[in-house]
Image 1 (cartoon, rainbow over the protein chains, first blue to last red):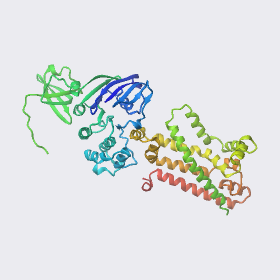
Image 2 (cartoon, rainbow over the protein chains, first blue to last red):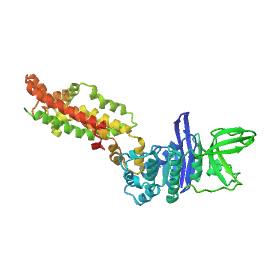
Image 3 (tube, chains in turn orange, green):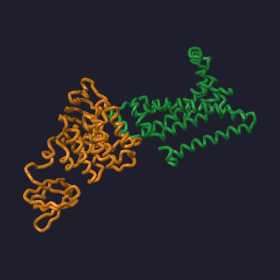
Image 4 (tube, rainbow over the protein chains, first blue to last red):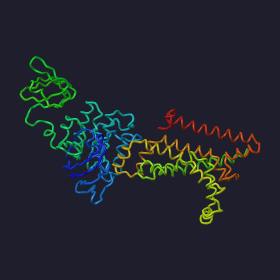
Length: 290
Length: 223
């Protein structure tokens, strides 16, 4: 279990901000930090990892104190055993994919390497240098490298944001597989609601340096009164009036879907809004396409 | 022709470059990572030899190390070190004189590497030394090469400091640049030409190789 109660004064674009994060995270959970940029998501991960020192508070992980301002405890990041996937991947350019993984495990148990390589399908890339890999491949290596050291906590700093949709979906699947295989307590930073719903057990919504809301993704993002059989999250692209009804064009992942709506339904709807499209009473047809 | 001054020159440059590398590496690592208020002062001191006339440096060395005063006498008696007009003295003077040529490339090489590399390595439980050796140094080969070659070439080319503190003792302190000066004074232009042309060609080749390698023209041997 992770107990986090940390404060840090940060300089943000809108002046000084007081970051104060207080939360408890259960062993093996997949947590997402959600919020606009500059609310302190990355700083929170960095403080948990020991790359940034909080001004006050404490961090307790599995009954061990990692940081305690009052007792002057601050465990070095080397000893925290954290797997961290950086936004810029941070792969070591002088080592091949395999060497990157071996360096990460060091003298520890290397048994996970083969399994992780298998899960994220790095087999053919093992002997390549990072410079020769595409963004998505680099990201897989970075993920694999963070997992093979069998960390107590896995921290993912917006690892999927730079990828296009199909790569992103694939990586989400890898993440799910890894999570179910290794049961690592995971903290993810993400802006993508569909991704969050797919991956996480719990969401912390950060605003101005504090956790404003927390709960399951459904509680946070989806109106629970609707008990649809099909639910998709998408983004409104266009709202058109046709006679007495409205046609709303919604982008769901990489499909464009047209939904019919009444005036009362589109009143608060704007282009760019995140929406949920749900349906109850219909009979879906299934065609094999591949 | 007497080859001794040339051999001595390259001996000096070699010793100085090796020592400088091991002095400059921790120094530049410290400069990149420190938050100390002393940093600008240390940086200034490191860079001073770039602008200060070498004779100034040589003059103060001469005064400091002279057995005629307290410090020089103490060095001589306690450690048996005679730094004026000796090879050891030349090495120490050259270390300081060539320091910026090694520190600056290493410092900028270290500073240009993304911070996340160091952070990733330390999160894997690696010590700073292990990170430096396994991650940082292999990814700044161009800077290492530049530092080593510039320090070497600069030591080969020094004159003022050597003249002041080393004098002109054959086999001890008479390096090539001094020998040239000596031969010209003696109107022995042929010998002066020989030393000069050798130094000219050698330094040209050394620097050319650096630019070829760092410019990616000889990529195969350096990847």
